[in-house]
Length: 282
Image (cartoon, rainbow, N blue to C red):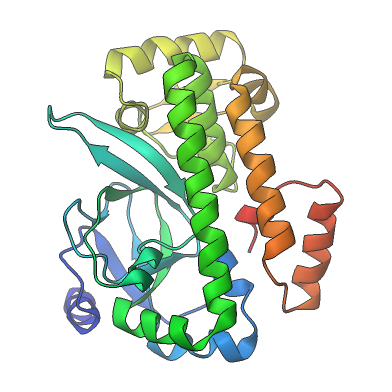
């Protein structure tokens, strides 16, 4: 199986990626792909390879070429900004609502961040060259990339404001809620070290903040490699950034992404009536 993964990386022209362990047949679980009409999706599917990635896998490093393009079907990927003093801080979080390296449609370019998986999952890969070719042919693909780009920019803006203005406990609650949006369980497989990197703080700060969240009942328990949350109480602790960001992204996906199937159409209408979560729904 390791040889098969190596062959898939070479065929896609990818840089070295750590901990990608399995190649599968391509499927549709990604929100952007699910929004494409069959003919437009057909421009991509012949070239997809589906991979599994483990926690802490590095999918692209800062300075690497944005190639291949990943369409996550599950899991969570953090975009980490590496500072000159060796510290790191997360700028965005992405799951099946997005596409890593989709901005390669603008032409060959280097990544400004390091993309690290925080929650294990799967993704469909396609070479940047093949994706650019499909992008040039399809109005629908161009539309989903545009919507995704605006959603990423919106998240960047909210995270920047949140980091500057809000306390660590509110920011940690926001990151935990964002992770929970992408995990179908109240028990999040995330370490305190990973939370420290997301927040850009010391591990001791995470430990103290986690204690405060436990006292508030927002985190009933946490242990080695997991954090159990009480979502309702965690939402009360989180800063307003989470609710505002989520509402705006939901509205954007609801109003601007096409729903080619009746099932997705019903889901879209439910969200338009005020039911949150379309950005993270398949």
